[in-house]
Image (tube, rainbow, N blue to C red; front, side, top):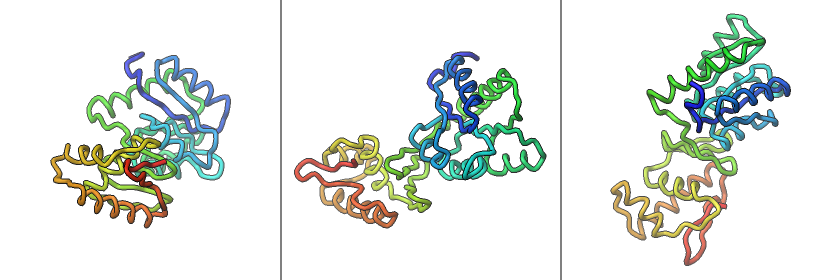
Length: 230
């Protein structure tokens, strides 16, 4: 249904310049937002920053193929992925499904068929499950809002409820100083008992976990003001 998903963002991972521009133009005509990847060594980083609701993924790409990037995305998100490829063997289709793909369309394809598949997949995914992408990324660190984990350079750690809430509060307001009172109020929303000493303990534990991942000085203290992630 044209215009139904006005806020939906679609990311195109396609190394054929003409093809991706045609797809993007058609997506925009349907009222969606869209972008395409240009650096195929950093597909996951682009995904985390753009936070799309659907991905169109070519299989044959430079450096790493679409199966690889699909598996990386599946580590943090259930966002729907449609593979687009000139390859059409049964093994390719099986691989696409096994790696976490939701649909497969063979080149050359009709744009009308592609849009029908996109709309159908969006309806199935979001109307019934409301399972939108739930990650925040900053400087390579990916916070998964679904399972309270933080991922950095292929290393993943679980966070406690308070650690997660603190990191989420700071990351969503990155670049701005967040006062201790604001963080404690955020923790109190979940009915957690948090006083000044408890907050200090949680901040220190969170910093230690981030350092174990390789994120040194990720959370900075602004004396007398609070904390900031730059």
